Length: 414
Image 1 (cartoon, rainbow, N blue to C red):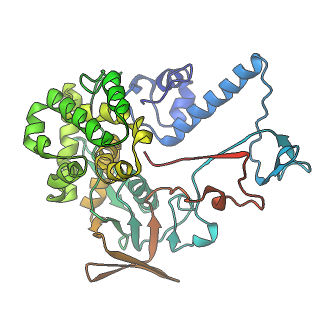
Image 2 (cartoon, rainbow, N blue to C red):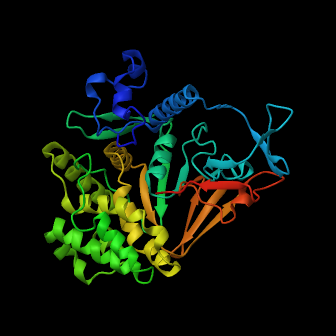
Image 3 (cartoon, helix red, strand yellow):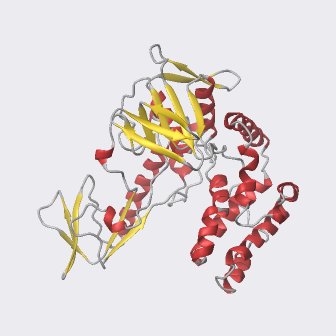
């Protein structure tokens, strides 16, 4: 539940809801706690409530705010008198001085979606009735796992045994259901791990140390930052640092070292072992020092990324950023349990595509060609996450696209 508080923290807001409200969402008041993972739709309700709260507070101090919901913006045009916003709910446009286009996701074109191919999990998948068939899901992140769970929801039920093991039972008639998650490396995210909240300050890579590194200029900035990262990790987790050979690594090679052990193991066996470790650490309130240090370093370093020159930006994305993202994007243990349950039920497998694979769409199926092998899927879901447009204006369905007075803010995967 580590969400930025807006007057009330997420937990405080939940505790203010009625018993009926909680029960309708499968929650129990006595079970609420700050480390709890909840469905994202509930988090959305929290942010909507807090948004409306902020609107009211702003109006109380004199701001004039209009909120138009279920309102489609059909065009935005820069005129001599200001910026005209045309909508489907008013004959005349609204004239403003500044427009911030904060639409978030860049949705795939609807015509690309069909009953056999979903260009993202958000293009009708949740409402679709997918028959028991061969389902391919491109991606192995939480979005891909959520897509798999959405598919199986109509074909069986999850249940938990006394030993806390989650199982999945197919409905009669759904025995033909097969789901394949696939990615270049076939690596699954790890389960979210226990750590102190609020986060403790870093000892070596302090704000002052990072500012001093920036003050030396953009040349070799990534290498200077990495030296601070190495020292921080050696301070926090000396045994792990020695075991991974941290002193011999660079911003370019650390990602290979980070994933090396995981790549040599079966992904489901790794997930099972990781889940057991995470649950044990949670019971014992044990923090894995190197995971915790990298988590805090991620938050400190991400503010410096705009300071990197082009070469360092590329190096960062290809190396060190992959470590930060993997560690930061740890997923709810319940998602791992469900993934393992589907695998034990013989429904789900993981396919490692490698760097050179080909996706071929046909009217009634999707083909994946990799390592001289050919895989066919009756239904295919691209769950790699939303992508930013190279030219933001071209992604907007307006006849008068973004001009000098417009500002677009992209949403990107963390």
